[in-house]
Image (cartoon, rainbow, N blue to C red; front, side, top):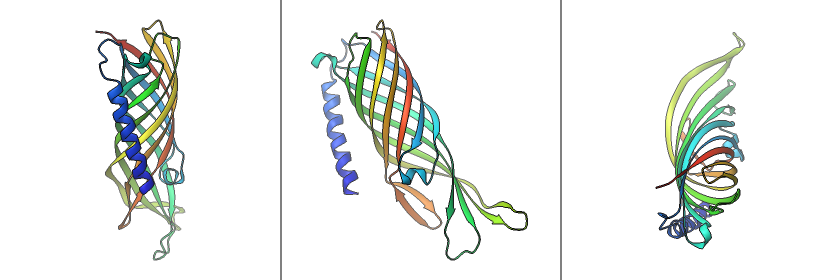
Length: 224
């Protein structure tokens, strides 16, 4: 847990530095972007409870006129529905074969900073870090194997639980700038959620799921 806390502190320091550096942006064109994304679990804690999924997002990029327009502040939101994950349960006090099926809706609101090309070039590589407020809408249902019907029977209906969390991501991408009017942005992210409580029976289990992501976005300049 200390490692996650130290990482959060470092991200907050980088975030504050990026936001400070990206000040006084009125003379620099801003960018609004919408993107489609594919997200997949990249660690055992995420893979045990969800599959891959697809979603949508959008962000605003505010470049700085300082340091040759290398720094920018970023704010955005995205949403993804992760596919259902079936997981066997080992209950020593219960003789039946039992499984839990989990479906997750994952939304986050993030702010951060990025470093890279924000000028007039055609190829504009960039990398960034973001800190996020995350919401999980988790659907779970429990089933047991019925030997008479030779099928799974639901004995605890689907229920919805909302789980708020915090997290961060690291990103890198390449943007194609077409005449300073519109852009195509292709990139990768690695995301980590912190302190996610999953309710399993009567015991609350806290996990730190990690995900990988690919995204493809289209951006437009916002001129004043």
